[in-house]
Length: 228
Ligand SMILES: *Cc1c(COP(=O)(O)O)cnc(C)c1O
Image (cartoon, rainbow, N blue to C red; front, side, top):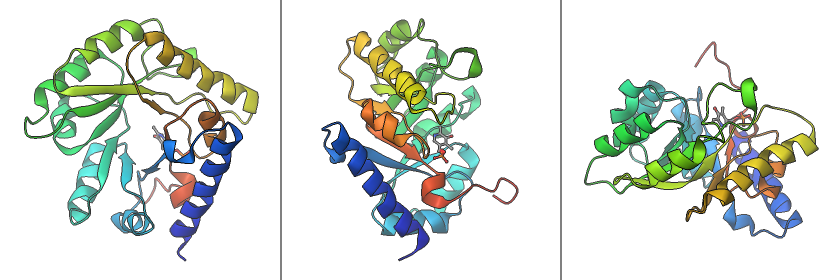
């Protein structure tokens, strides 16, 4: 077995045991392969080992890999910060966007979503770590943003995404992810997605209701930004 295939089976086991610990169906937790800085050949290996959903942070890098892998039925998720001059390409080339944190971006994505494609699946990125994080909508602004996005025609608001400040303390991890889950419930909207949990904290995220865990390092190994 390749290293990537081995990593996938280790992750499947981590997800299974984290879900069972809280009486959740492991199939309710999706594994989103975060492939930033990794070559298309790594994604192909992950596909061959069973993965379909891939998350990318940088538009140009993602478009290059999409072209190289156009023979595969992959589902592409945009998970990085979004500048307004990138919305058209994102609306055209992705099935999901996890990192929407302001209305202007959502409006552009809706306007620019090609009519022949299904609605773009959206998660609102929420900041539950206060000043420690610069991206994400504040909990105070979330209800109005969620209402406004729900009304946009070519988007489908699915839920929330969060990247809490990293910590090894399981109680702190639980508290951050529980806060996301509570914010989602308080919206009173028909949402089915919580995108939260990364390589080091997926267990806590699953315990608090994650439906996508976004995994890079534990799947593809450490990232080398010097040689993308
Ligand atoms: C890089 C990244 C991840 C993956 O993080 P790992 O710790 O490598 O698993 C997840 N989500 C987002 C938004 C990222 O940018």
